[in-house]
Length: 451
Image 1: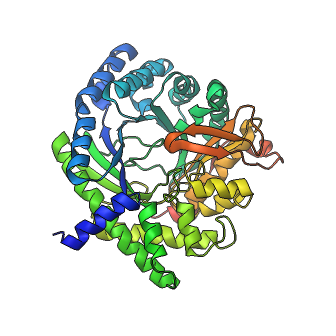
Image 2 (image 1 turned 45 degrees about the horizontal axis):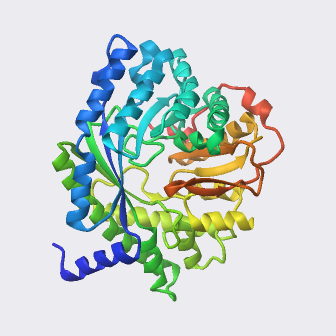
């Protein structure tokens, strides 16, 4: 039961500390939509998504009004599209556009699942599908795409890594008029999870039920205020403070998730407690780390602070709900976090330091802008590095990188809204071309052999 103190505390979190339900995401299986032709399949996909999610905007609006908690985004994720268009992969774009049309009809902000899973090998139809990504992302507004190129069990598919470097470059070129915005809707994963409610990497896993509600809760401002209130605490006490705060945030998310699932006729999937920042001051993961005692995020000690934060968030979330999943932890997207933006502009935060930080946080190199003339091979090498961290550490890692057309180090890209702005960061000039061109499979680590 909630007492009056709990209720007042939650009201304060919402009004002063930026607590929100970042997203209610409905996962929908498209496997029943497979038909003899791409056109028939696309038509069924559109009808299915529109029918299953027809009330998501209304229900989330009602819940927000009833409980007084902002629900920022309403989203849909679907079965990886490469799986349902294998017989007609060359026409996959028809299904992509049908999904985008459904997203517009529903009034949701993003729809994820134009995805492929090629972590152990890449069939011809999957390669054909992946080749369609740049054109599809350039001609749709709300569709998001992801490709899983590695896992701790299978290793890293370097042929897919090489291809994705080229795809990222092509996507940037196809959306050059918007600073390569298409790349902000494209994620390359290692160890992708099936119940992730956050874009751009969400898809509905084949092991999931037909229709599922997953909720993503975000509260960097709440955690920041909690740490601010204990200025003399030691690290152990800080960790306990973060755990208690994460517990409270997760309880709010579980309440919304259960009620949304009931009203939408779907199963309750998971609550993803992720400290997902926004460009708004006071809603920043970087500022949490600085409140712990860093002069500027990116300096020495940053990785240790982030490791403690991520672990405490997960522990607090698991205590609050038996259905914590997704990516739960702390996100460090550069363009979406005012503290990260300012640290990058000062030159304190660089890609190498961000890579080290990804070993201990959720996801990986996220929303990073690099010079437009960065080669496809360099992007592939960055993807390979990040996938290696995920594979060896048995965690989800990802790369969402924007080679901003025509931009140089020190300039900026600006996407607006939650996607924010990003200073263009330097990459190493030395080539990794020969390594990337070797292709093949980086074998799975020895600790993957657990059967």
